[in-house]
Image (cartoon, rainbow, N blue to C red; front, top):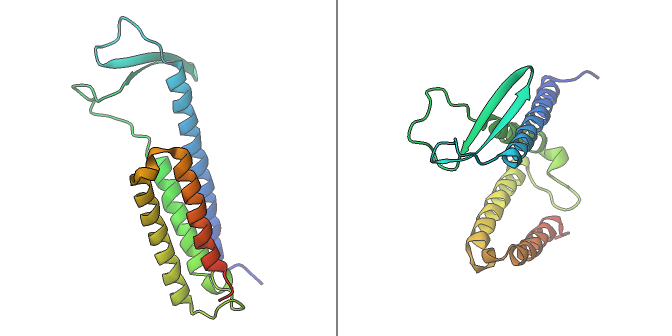
Length: 169
């Protein structure tokens, strides 16, 4: 039995997601290392936080960090956002390809409840929305003032939600 077009699309999106995730993590690690290498200097502009000198590929780089945007930005500004966007978008696409287009296989357990794929997908989407709203409200509530208390609350909240999704009723 050969692979269908959908299998190939899923394969390509899956690898794109992995590569985008690696790029995102790599750039995050780079900026952590960059922040740790910053040094104060009397020659820095007034609004600058620190600078770092680096060498790579035979070239020398002098990087200056500003905590707020300086008065004048260059015409060419490199944004490190596409790795995160690509990871999120490809992950959402992969989620749809696997779970929503394959709802009968991955989303529905007919021994627990007989659902049609559209109903199962709607329940899934509502579950994501309810979880997102509950998380946001919990973070903005007094619970959000303590990471430990918030974490314990969210652990139990989502545990109850999961129990509701896997119950035999």
